[in-house]
Structure formats: C-alpha cells, structure tokens
Length: 521
Image (cartoon, rainbow, N blue to C red; front, side, top):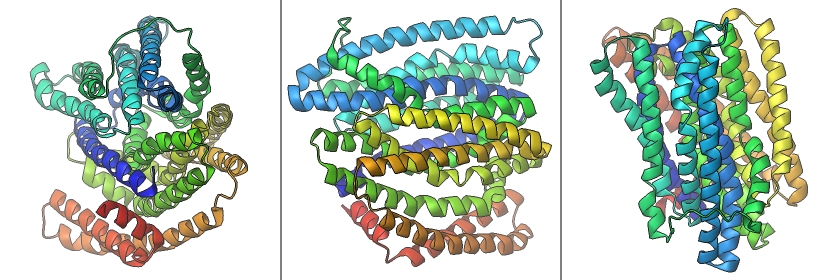
C-alpha cells in the first residue's frame, strides 16, 4: 500500500474509531454519573480489564499479528482456497481453546468469591468478572473475523464493530437501569451482562462481510497443518509482546485496589481520555500498517517498508505531540467538563482523575510508536524480540509502581502508577527502535527527530495559547452563563484556540501537506 492509500485506509478506520470513542465517551460519562470513583466502579473496571487482557493476548493483538502475515502469504502464493482452508482450521482451534479458557475462568472466579477471609471489594470484583469472562470467547472470535477482513484490506465493518459495545452499554444504562431500581450492585451486574451481549453482537455483524469475500463458514479439526503451526509459533510470543501495555494497565489496576477503592476508577477515566486520540489515530494506523508491512515483507521490498515506517512515525508525531501538550495544559478542565455532571462524580473525582491524566498524557507519543514498531517486527515474522522487550517493560513497570506507591503522597500514588506505565513503555520502544534500525537499514531517524522537534515547538505554543484562552475566559463566562454551559464554552474556546494556533504554525510543514493531500483524495 502506498502512503496515500495507508492514510486513506487509516482514515476509514479512524472515522469509525472516532465514532466508537465518541460513544465510549458518552458511555463513560453515564457510568461516571451512576458510579463516580466508588468501590463499585473500580470493581467493574478491574473485572472488565481481565477479559480485555485476554482479548489482547488471544484476540486483536496476537491473532492479528500472527494470522495476517500467514494468511496474506498463503493467498499470495497458493490462492484463496488454500487461505480459507487454513482460516477454517485456525477458527476451530481458537474456538475450542477459548471455550476452555472461558469455562476455567468462570470456575476460578466462582471459587474466588468463597475463599476464607476475602475482602468485600474482591468479592464484588470476582462476582462481576464471573459474568463478564465468557466475553473472552466472543470478542476474540470477533477479533479473528476482523483479522480476516483486514487481510482483504476491508476495514470499515470491523472498525464499526466496537461501536456496538458502547451502544449496548449506553442503552442498558438508559433503559434497563430505571427498570431494575437504584441499587448500584444490581446496576453493575446488569452492565456486566450487557458486555456479554455486546461481544456476541460484534462477532455477528462481521458475518455478512466475510461471506462476501468467500468465507466458507466451516469448522475443520485437521490442525496438523504447517501453516497453522507457523501461525501458532508466531502467536505465542505475539500474545505477550503486543499485550505489554495491557499487562501494565492490569498491574496498575490491581495495585490501585491496594491504595484505595477510588484509585482504579480514577485511573480508568484518565486512561479513557488517553485512548480517545490514541484509538482514533494510532490504533487506526497500526491496523492498516500490519497488512501493509506483511505485503512488503512477502515481496521482500525493504525500501517500501522503510519509507512506510518513516512516514507513519512522522505523521503520528505531528498529531500526537499537540494532543499530549493539550492534555497536559487542560486536564482539569477536560475532566470537569466531560465527567462532572452531578450524580456520583464530584469535584474530588475530577481532581483525582485529572492528576492521573496529566501523568498519562506523554504516553500518547510513546504508545503511538508501539503501533508502528511492533507490527513491523510481526510482519517480518519476528515475534520473539517484541515479547522479550515486553517482559522487560512489564517488570520495569512493576518495580516503578511499587516505588511510587511507597514514596508518593496517598492521593498522588495512582498518578505515579500512570507515569510508570509511560516510562516502562518508553524504555521498551527505545530498545525496539534500536533493534529495528539494525534490521532495516537507513531508517531516516534524523528526519523523524527533526519532524518531532518541529511539532513539539509548535505544540508548546499551542498549549500556552489554549491554557491562556481557558484561564482568561473562565471567570468572565462563569459570571454570565450557567455553570455547565460555561464549562463547555471555555473548553471549546480553548480547544479551538489551540487547534487554530497549531495549524497556523505547522501549515507549511511536510506532514501537514501529506495528510491534507491524502484526505483530499
């Protein structure tokens, strides 16, 4: 895929991802209204993190990373029939394995609730996790369907599928909560069952698109296939390598329970704001890059891979750098405006979440780099290197988590954990980048660094302009408008001022011209 095609395909994925993130933000606003940063909110978020980790291990990350290169190579060299035969075997094996994992998980959480001396917060967490854990099977099968469609460079259907999760949870809170009463425990349980329904919907919506591309929809137990073995060998290390960020997030949430019942919820709300730009831009880019890199690797076209890496890093830096500075400058205003609508989310919740958001913000640039580096290794069928670096990052994150928990003040400990996630990922990406330089010669790091520094300088001016617009307009508007309308107006004014400033400063940059040209086409 050429640069313009990659950007346009990323634009398709990004557009649907933007819709999904927008719906996700609405979902989180409603969750914040009902549960705030309470223990029940933290229990739900921790319980939901566990099947999401398996989704990364055996779903979007590992299956896509291992399946797409093998599937693309099989189609290229042996034709569609051989590729679909391989896919049927993989689907059957995945369904059997994930069903076993789901059953064992439900049994484990059921036993966990009856352990002697277990605290209430873990009983509630295990109860919710027991309901949600079969989501592992459903969402991983949906992710495998997504990998197949992406292999055909069809991104729209699979990019829309996550919207269904947010829609179903929103409908549950708006329509079902009033019917079951105001008891928070019952509401959290209903939300957990809605997660299961959403997993099934995400899998089902992709079936028509698969049929159009000729998917035979059959199971095959003949797993003694060299292509399947090759995929499994790639998938094992990929499961850990691509899930490093999720491991770190899970570690943060489990340790945050140790700090207090409010901490996991505060980390969740801040993390969601990080994943809004990350999901719209970086994840979309990573989704498109893996099949593109796989094609370059299959054709042994090192020059195209090198150029794709160069452009992807420059474009991500151009977008993520101002997003990072903007979050640093406006974190409290953003949290207050989006989440503080009365109900259970109060001023203390805003303060705690904003602190975590400021320490998570630099992760936008770091996590974006992972969306380029890791797929490049997987496309070259090297999954061992990312997993080794991933294990190092997880260990480093754990050590720094413990240090911050023991040394920081009580209501800053969770922010320290957010920062440790960023630092651990930064160390891992620095090592991966160095190794990638040895594998793919002449990556233009000087050009990439120059592009990043220009974006950083423009972003600093942008952040100063946005903060000034908010600081000076807030006292004026608060005196004339209702509180929430004033907050929305201040935030819109700050964001508009920042965006206009950044565009003016970067109007003549190469990255702006390339992105504008791709959007026009």
